[in-house]
Structures are given as C-alpha cells and as structure tokens.
Image: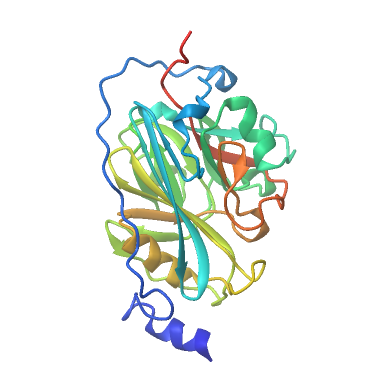
Length: 293
C-alpha cells in the first residue's frame, strides 16, 4: 500500500515518501589548465595517488578529477550518489571484460584495476544482447537498430545526447563524433524534464543511473533493493525524479539488479561490498595527472 501511495504521488510530490531530506547537489570545481593526451591503450592511463583519496573513501580530488560520494535515503531506500567532475573529456572512458564480441564477464574490480580507474560503475552489458548501436572509446562496435528503444550517446566533448528511436538514421543527425553509446534505458531526464515512463510494469528494484549536470560534470546513482535491509528499491518514475532532483539535465537508466556496482578506487561502495556480480563492461574515470617521479 505504501509503495502504491509513493507511485501515485511521485510526479506531484517528488520529495514525499522517504525523500524529504535535502538532496546533495554538485559543488562546482575549477581545475587549473593541464596538458593531457589520452592513451590509446587504457592500461597506460595514469595511476591515481592514494594521497588524493579522503580517509573515509568518500572523496577524491586532484587537479583533473573530483569525485564526491554521498549516502542518502530516498523513498525508504538507501542510495549512493556520486558527483564526478573532470578536466578533459577523455578521462571518461569505458572498458569491457574482454574485447568485443567476447561475452566474457568479470567482477567490476577485476575490469577496473588494470585501467587505473578512480571511479567506476557497471555499464549496460551490451554483449548480453544482440541489438543496439554501441560505440566504445570512439569505436563503433555494433550498429543494429533498436527502434522501440532510446540510446544514450556521449560525444567526444563529454556531452550527453538522447537518441530516440535508437536507429542509424537518428545517430546520423548528431553533429559531434561519438565517444561512447549505451543501449539500455529508458531515458529518465531529457532537457531538464522528467520523462514519462510508458509501456513498463511498475516494479521496485535495485537500479543504476547516470546523468550529466553541467559541462564535464556528472551524477551517478546506485539505488539498493531488497538485497539490503530496510530497502525496497525504487520504481523507474521515482528514479527519474531523483535524477532530476540531483540536478541532471540528461539522465539514463543502466543495467541494474545484482549488476548494479559502484567502485571507488578498488572498493565497492554500494550495497554489500563483497558481493560483486560478474558483468560485461564498465564506465570509469581516470586522473589526467602524471604521478610524481
């Protein structure tokens, strides 16, 4: 009954049903000018200094990357929010467990460690499916229309674009080259507006979403489900409202359920830390600052 009440009032009262606390917001960081060339081989990315992580593990900051983590309670459910800011768009990268078209899976920390990830989340596990238009690190890996769905494209400037329907014709309308694209969804927020989620049965689950707040500034949310005590999960409309309330002008749903994993350094920071389902791919951020000699 409580879940039904929350669903009916989600769009009218976004701060109701357990979301009454003030939500964290992005605190803008100004980075100094840097010279940086992204490596073609992600294993050659700069490793991050442990000195740039806070003692509690909830913050990372250097002259090219800032990550702020927040633990919140929304809709009677625990969520982990991460605000990420970068100095250069190539610091936002993706990695698979094995090169496409392999369907190999691995734990998020196994995928993230060799590429020197500072912060990572699971992506869309696109290799689990056969359709969708998928770019990764500037390469077009798959080009199969999914006209019933919408995709998320991230261009080489680090800006988000919703592509709906997810077809080659719609992708051809984008004027800036694509660095990454994802075939999962649905779209949660577009042009600052919460999107109506249609054609889906209302369920309350563990979920993962990403959004763009500002230039080279992003928000990620991992919402717990019944896997954690006192958490019942959220519906897709609730997740969309949450992303908008966190400041995202564009937001998109990623693979959720047991796949939902958020990693700071080598530590999983959402849900049960030791529970990591094998996944196909990740979105991650690296530092653009070379280590001191």
